Image (cartoon, rainbow, N blue to C red; front, side, top):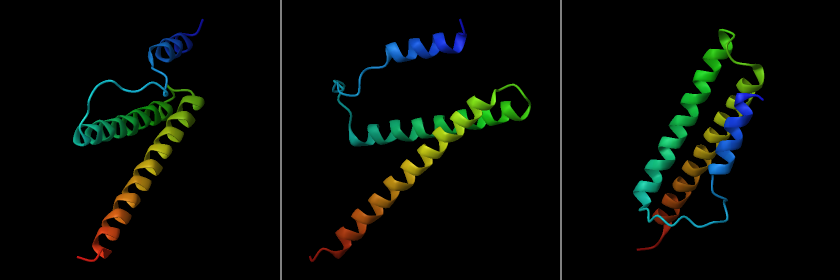
Length: 96
């Protein structure tokens, strides 16, 4: 059996379903910091996979998957930034 499929099965079993609430209390700052760390980790993993693919150590499927994940992460961050800018502009337009 392939080691990657075993690791994927273990990760899948360890992850909690998205419908279950998170019981740990987080402040907005802590949630933002966690999100920023996850974003940086995703980009770093994609970069390492791309380097491995360039020297022939990674398979093309892993490279495509890493690039798709990094593209999705960047699009998500850009969308979040746009929403924050929209909210800021809306606050500026409020009458005082």
